[in-house]
Image (cartoon, rainbow, N blue to C red):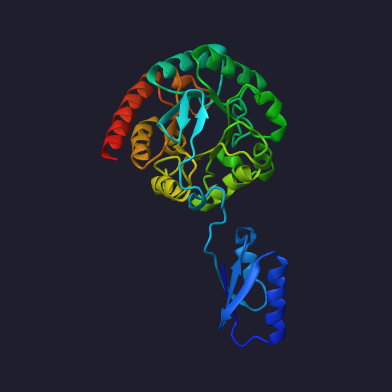
Length: 332
C-alpha cells in the first residue's frame, strides 16, 4: 500500500502520521519525496480512514482486501464436494421450489428435477420477504419436508438460513444458503465461518463484486473454507427484468477468486421466459453451476411462481446447458 503525503507538511505532522501508521502494526518505509510505503498485513487497513489522517493526500492499495478469497494466494480452483457433486470442478445444477409448501409438492419436484439431472435440491423454509403479509415459509416443518424429499431422491439439500439461532434446525441441511438480503449480516457470516458445512453466499442486489468477496472473507476467516459464491442479479435502472444478471461479474469473480461461482438466473429474470437465456449466458461466462427455481404448478405457487420453470421446462434447459458446457470443455 502506498500513501502520498501532503506537500510542505511540518515535521510534527510527518512524525505523527508515521507513528500512527506504525501503531496499526504495519512497517512504514520512506523511499523519498512524498511517498510512504506500507508493508505487512495491509489488508487489515481501511483506506477510507487512512485518507482522513492529517498529512495524507491519497492512498493506493496494491493488494486485495480479501486475501483468503483472492486467487493471487490460491491459484488453483477450490472444489466444494456435496454428495456426488464437485462444485468448482464439474458443472452443477441446483433446482427446486422457491418455498417448500407441502410434502407432496416438494417430493414431486425433487423426483422430477433429479431425473432431469439436478445434483442438489433447493427449497426455502425461512423466507425473508419484502412484505410481512406474503408467505414466509413453513419454518422448521419446511426444512423437515425438504430433507425428507432429499433423502428419498438421493439429493443433498440447500436452504436459506436467516439467523444464527436457527442452526440447530439445519442439522440435516447439506448446504447453508445466505440470501442476498443477508450478504452483509456480519454476525451470521461470522457464525457460519465456525461451521463445517458448505455455505452458498448470494450477492446482494446492491453490492459490488469486491463487497461480495469481502463478505466471503468473513466466512473464510472463521475457518470455513467451503464457500460457494452466487450471482443473482443486481438492481439497475432496467425495468424489463426483476434484476440485471451481472454476466461480467461472473467472469470477474472467476478471475479474482478461487471460490466456485454459481448463477441464479431465476431471481435475476423475475419471469419465466428470461430464465433459460440468462442461464445459458451465465454458463458461457464461466459459471460453475446454476441455481434454478422449479415448481410443478407455478401458477399456484405461494412464492415467486412467475419466475419458476415447470419441471418439463427445467428438463429441457438442463439438456441445453449440458450440451453447451460439453462444447465449452472441448474448446478448452
